[in-house]
Length: 358
Image (cartoon, rainbow, N blue to C red):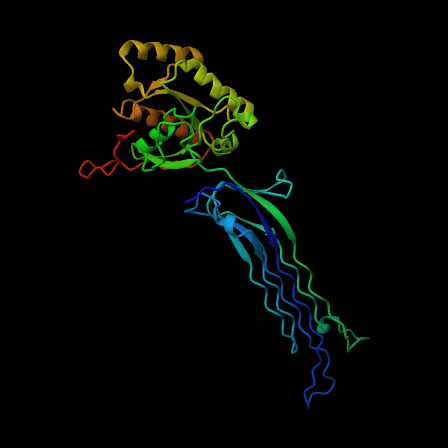
């Protein structure tokens, strides 16, 4: 499935139905009088966050959404039916902006949230509504009000617990594929990952949602490489895992390069809790490994984790560190935390293979 995280759509709510001008003309009823009904209300345009979506690709092929016009009023005091509303279904994490792409209309962060983007026009009054003691045969009715019409921007920021950041080929996609059932493209060349990937990892009975974004390079905030346009997908995460490849000649510089891009992007990403890890350590001899760990520690100010997808070294420990930070953040924000059920030792292990081919 293609990935699309920003698109522009045209919406228009339905016009209200017109009121009717009508008079009773039954043979045996004298002084019949007006009986024109009111028009129906026009259909609204809603947006709703639903489960099972993680891209806005559907809106590449349909950009126009219009509510139905209300039915006109009729004689015998019959009110017209309301027009059908239309609902745009989007993934959780979708933001809606005005046409200037800066003014936020709504932010749908949870499945089931709905917002009315355009209200349908009210139906017009029929002539029965205008009957008075001095005007018992009104011959006028109101037209329905017009609906609202505008263009809005949809921008998706994926909902994930942890975000994977680093230079291209830092091992982010390999880490994601190793600890989850996600199968991102993995290859030995830069920018293998061209769009964000999501995966769900399970550790000690608790699930963690991981987001892998395309690698950052120096000058990404100025549009170099793929740029920083995908960093929005880690804005909502609770913790960052910063991976530095053991293949880097200068691991300290590799770390500081990405940190500089995170700080230049802003939006609070650089202030998030961070776990630093040296990946692909299985390719190093003991001395080189110690030297690179020491250099990375000097650059980031803490002892980095040492990871290998091939030998599975450090993978479980990394997930547990992520879990601890996520649980602590949820507790601090007063969010409900469902305690995991104890694992039953007699059940077969259905976890994915933790070894990677690359």
